[in-house]
Image 1 (cartoon, helix red, strand yellow):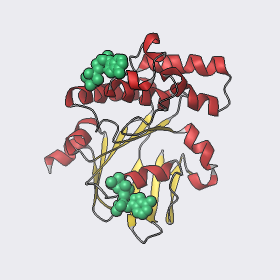
Image 2 (image 1 turned 45 degrees about the vertical axis):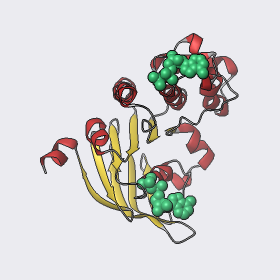
Image 3 (image 1 turned 90 degrees about the vertical axis):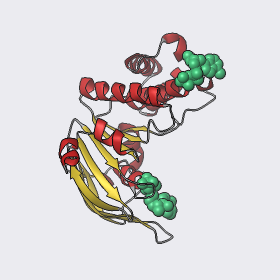
Image 4 (image 1 turned 180 degrees about the horizontal axis):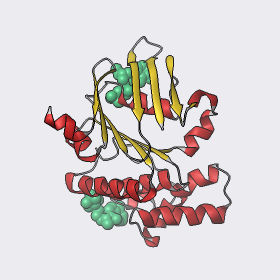
Amino acid sequence: MIRFESVTKRYADGTVAVDDLTLEVPRGGITVLVGPSGCGKTTSLRMVNRMVEPTSGRVLLDGEDVAARPAAQLRRSIGYVIQHAGLFPHRTVLGNVMTVPRLLGWDRARARAAAMEALEKVGLTADQARRYPAQLSGGQQQRVGVARALASGPEVVLMDEPFSAVDPIVRAELQDEVRRLQRELGITVVLVTHDIDEALGLGDTVAVLREGGHLAQVADPATLLAE
Ligand code: ADP
Ligand code: ADP
């Protein structure tokens, strides 16, 4: 589904964030990139939707180099969830979730229907859809972030520390929710976390990164736990 081929990212200041990463992300599961802060997880994730361009190597999506596709189109067709949801405060929940479908050129009625459906999938109500993000709890805002990523029906959803800012009980609910959505929708999720327990609990495939942007290990959780 997604393949990193000898990917290196060196930022303008010389920092090597990702060092010669080769990694296969299988279709239709949850692949977790885990490792300490600064080991290149976010950079790796952002090279999938061209928010960051590799210095060398390439990232393939369905066998095609992502560099061959317009960056704007990729960012719209791949779902993206970040830690603090990143919602527009001056737009309602519904307005936020309609953003991507509207950017894709869907008419208002179709975008609205897709947004309402996505909100329903993450357990939010029509009443909550009319509110502004600040009127929801942190956990609910993350649900809105997930709904926004799903509204246009992407095959791939990238999640960058999606649950790190919420309390443990809400985090467990959201983890279950993502697991359920992944199965129901058959999407491919690539999730970044610094939390090894989250990685082992949620990942079908776990890629362990270490300082300097090196890939240490890739395995399923049972194999990792047995070692
Ligand atoms: P992680 O997600 O694992 O915390 P990042 O991918 O955010 O790691 O960062 C990897 C390394 O690259 C870190 O040393 C970070 O400081 C550095 N880095 C990230 N973004 C930039 C940037 N835009 N310019 C320079 N260095 C960066
Ligand atoms: P959490 O347990 O996720 O931290 P909160 O304690 O923040 O949740 O919120 C609990 C409930 O109060 C939620 O149903 C949320 O919608 C509502 N709520 C929180 N903040 C506001 C607000 N500023 N205006 C209206 N409702 C709010």
